[in-house]
Length: 183
Image 1 (spheres, rainbow, N blue to C red):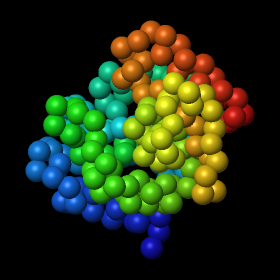
Image 2: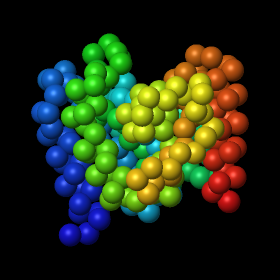
Image 3: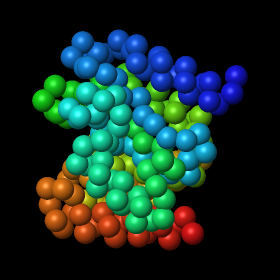
Image 4: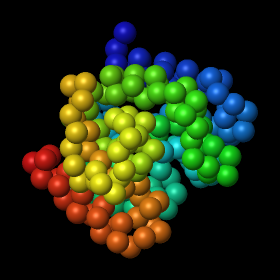
């Protein structure tokens, strides 16, 4: 089976998933999107209202900021893979429960296996703690972490950058570090 077919089947499985109660409150599962040859693989927290409506990751204000940061490092949104720890929106945008994270984890791991990116960019505390352990983004942002033959880069979630100008500046500096690594 080709990688393209494998990813398509995985996303169909995600769209039908009922592994946690969130399937009953979502409009659409948000599996993720991007090319099979993506060098960068972005992981956020969970879909928000606009993502739930469209079935696409990072389409609201956070998505616009993320796209502009990606462009600042010389890539376009279409050249990277973007997904979230959760594939369904938690009610009222609450933090994901550990049981929900564990239900979605195999999907994220399979996406990483299929895409095989050079760098996995973890956006915010939930993505960081879900993928590599209990690190605070305030202490780990701008740093790389190697685990399981993968290279992870940690930074803030764009939603935090929209709320706090100082976080946005940190995030810009982090993306500068990321750009240097890509050169």
